[in-house]
Each structure stands twice: as C-alpha cells, then as structure tokens.
Image (cartoon, rainbow, N blue to C red; front, side, top):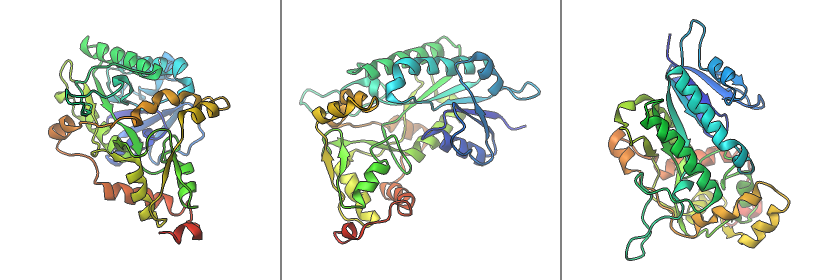
Length: 335
C-alpha cells in the first residue's frame, strides 16, 4: 500500500498539495472543517476539527493500522479568527503528527520577522532563514509563538518538522489575496485595483504552484533538515512592485497597463468598522512601506530548482481569469 499523506486545510494551498501528491500515486486525505468545496479527484475528504485528538488520530490512521507518513499543515484561519484559532490549530497538527509518528510539513508566512532589516547604509536586506523573529504586529507575535512551538518540538525530537515560509501569494483563484476576484472585476472594467500600501514599493510574491511543489519536496527530503535547520524560504522570484506586476497581468489579459491605487490607512480603518477582517489589515501595511524582499537561495541550492518564470506565472493567472472576467469594451480599447 502506498504511504498515506494527510493534508490539513482546503483553502488556497491545501488542494494544490493534495493534487500533486495524488498525481504522484500517493494515498491522500484532505481534512477540512466544512464540506462546502468540491473534493480533489482521487483524494479522500474528512470533515472535522484537527484539534480533537480522537478525530486527528482517526484521519491519520488507515484500516489495518497503517499511519500517515507525512502531515501537511496548510491551515490558515481568517484574520479575525487568529487570536482564537491559530495556535490551537498549530498544536492540533503538531499533536496529530507526533502521535502517529509522521513528519510534519507546515506552511508559514513572514509576519514573525517584523520589519525587514537594513544594512549600515540604509539598504533593505532580503529576509533569510537566519533573520531574527522580531514581530511588529499582533499577528506576527502569534506567528512567532507558533514557530517556537514547532521548532521546540523539532529540537526535542518529538516530531520531525519542516517549515516552508512564503511571501504573499500570486496565482489564479486567490479569494483571500490582493489578486482576488475584486481586482480582476476592477481592471476588466478599466478601473484601478486597490492596494493597502504603496503599490510602487518592491514586494516579493510567491506563486501558489511553487508553494505546493516545495511543500511536497519538503515532505520527501527530511535528511536535509538539521536540529535547527527546519525553516525554508520557498522559491520566490525577485521582488517587483505590485503596480508593475499588475501592469503585466493587465497587458496579458488584454486590458492594457492595469492601474493600482493606494487605499489610505485611515480609509481602511473606517472600512474596518463594518468588516472584522478588514479591521485586521492596518497593522500589516508595513509590508508595503519598505522593499519586501525574500532570500530563497538556501532552498534553491539544496533542492536544485527555483520559482516558476514570471511569464509562466502570469499565463496561468490569465488562463484562469479570462473566461471568468470578460473584458469590457471600454477597457480593451485602452490596451
């Protein structure tokens, strides 16, 4: 029987990981908290709470007693639920992997680093795995606590943990990102997309297919992780501005040089009075106030591959967007 791989989370990344694992011939289970989304072909779906040890043990064990070889934690509650759920979900996946003897591969972000460091000359430095965790936000502090829990369990030998850190996502079908349906509905009508920061500031984006591929790689290559070397920055292209990237997407989509406008923080705070998720955004806008650069060289040198070329990333986004967002005649006329 092929090894069992369990993917926790069915949002933006979990299904991509599951699809890659299934296509490689693995037995795959996806754990989600609701049955609202269609399942990935060839993948078992379990609905429940990974924080419940009995449920967690059931989904990580097959009939006959076979246990999961790898657990992938791709869970990410909405911003307004982080205080209540982020650490609890992280402890749930840690416990599930430890009890069944599985390797734990976790998807993480960059919030725990806080503001990027600068050298003596004032130049912003790329974020590498050795950068100290110095969060400047409440969400960054929670991410730091979660990282310490995971790395502590790794160092104590309780469970083998590989942490894959990505920047903000770029790719098709990303409802929780800047590149959401809202962005595409705007640009195909000739309007500007909205950025909760400076759209002209260099900002690294990580392609979602690269995230999924890299997490699967980490699940297969545990020999490269030392006692303190379980953190990996996932393949990410050099930073360009959000405005430049939006322009490339717009031209490929046939609407010309799509524009991006800055939404002032005061406006965001006002919108937050009526929306609990938007209420959480102002403390994160620091990521667009300075160059936001990612150093993925350790991953590339270890595993021998890097990020998907930008033109291929954009082609994938456009192939998804074109049939869903017909270009208005007024927008195409400006192309």
